[in-house]
Amino acid sequence: MKTRPLENNRTRRTAHRAGFTLLEVLITVAVLMVGLLAMSSTSVVVNSLRRSASDRARAHATVQAISQDLLSVARSASEDPALWAGEILAAYGPDGSPGNELQITGLDPWANSDHIATVTIITDETTTDSELGINVGMPRDLDGDGLASNADVTNNASLLPAIVDVRWRHAGGEFEIRQAV
Amino acid sequence: MQPGPSSSRRADQGGFTLIEVVIAFTVMTIILLATSSVLRRETRGITELQNMGHSERVMEGAFNRIYRTIQFARGFTPETTLSSTLNASETGQISLGSITGFPDQGSLVVDRGAATEEAINYEAHATVGTGVLTLARGAEDTLPRGHNAGSSVIWSGLAYPISNQIDPDPSEYDGTTDDLRGDIYFIGKGLGLSYQVPVDPAHTGSYLEGSEPRWGAQVSGGEVTGAYGAVVYVPSVEITEADRQFDLNEDGDEDDTFYLGRVALQSWSTDPGDSLRVNLTPSIILQEKGAYGGDMDADGFLDPMFLWSSDQGRLRLRFFVLTGTVNGHEVVRRFEHIIHLCNGSAE
Image (cartoon, rainbow over all chains, first blue to last red; front, side, top):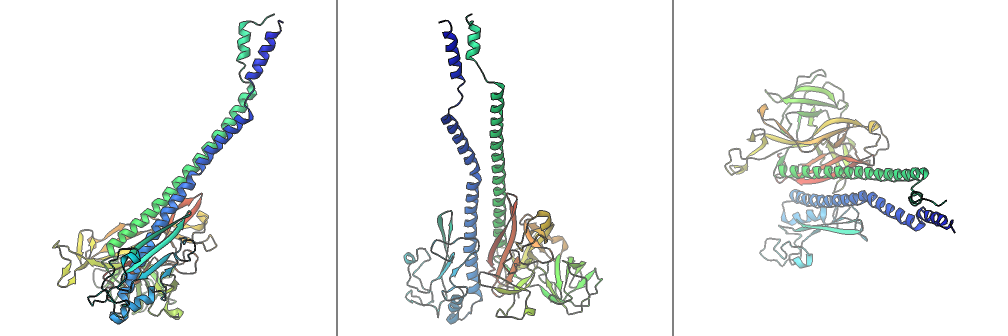
């Protein structure tokens, strides 16, 4: 009977020194892994944000470049109203060169699209802003006859509104910038 | 013998053995080292990304500043001829037919495209007559040569599309460049554009003189009628791919030499004291040494930084910028803008 306390003490010491259970170790490792992964993903997130901002800046630059180029084309086109619009359309019209759909280096197009930028030159005075989805003051007089009724001013335009549309994709999202020129 | 109270307490407070402590410290050390390594790498990565973002913002700011400065400008096409024979050893002065649009310091190319082609750096305009002074002959890996009177002279800043864009003879152009509108045959190196803007030095509220704009530029003392300005590339540091162990222009080798330089606004008038140069960017813009305007991205097309279409008032800017490093790899980014100069060309 006198040895019982000794046995009790040994049992208690063994229980105190039992160490960690497998579950405790797994939880600890999991918490550590989550912490390390969270830290290591910071730069991935920052890089994604930087790339996103970089793409947006590139898209803005593209819109500005095309807008400025349209002004240059308009400047160098014939001063003859019968030819002026035709020469602009020969550059940025659907059948022109480079045409109204442009690839832009460094940007990914929307799914199911093979181009980034679209240029729409409005030659129909009766088109409305709601049809275009942007406020360019349509319908309006584009040939200087005081009316907004000509459905095709290609041969006598004195003014040609244009819309530059840049669409790009990044990190699963699709983005767009539209600007009237 | 019964255990005393102190023996019982020691048994309850069994503590750790030395081996347990050593293992615990080892595990702790490994975890701390791994954590600090991840933190260090993340901090470095984020700093690198911030630096790249900063470089991109600097370039956007520079483009905006250039646009604001020259949108109402008229551009020049500085081309002329030698008005007298130039010996290979001459380092004092070159007499030119005109210095209109030539910056007060810069570089020009004599006999462009010929076997005797030579790049010459100069430090100032001649104070008497039309010419430039203080010459560094045989610049940009060319050789000092003699040139006859009447030889062609072009400011090295200039690059412009040739008029015949349909299958021209190779002797008519220096190269082709890819463009928004398709491939363009062009002449020149493309290091800048010289211009004049409407000015109002007397603050009258009008930029007109009669019915014409009063042309000039902002110089060190303010706006001056008859002054000129230029947006120019200024090389400042020479770097090699071998030193950086990186193929900067993606041409498949690491044996090219480049300049890192900046874009600056330079202006001058007939008074040498008016000269002004304002830096728009730090030295982060790449150009291959001895091949200004060369192919910078191995796409088979040349990449002049400034391409001036005088008939359209169109200036294309294209810069390759060393934006920084990511994980030890250099990152070169292409920046491109087009500016339509409302007042077109001076010619």
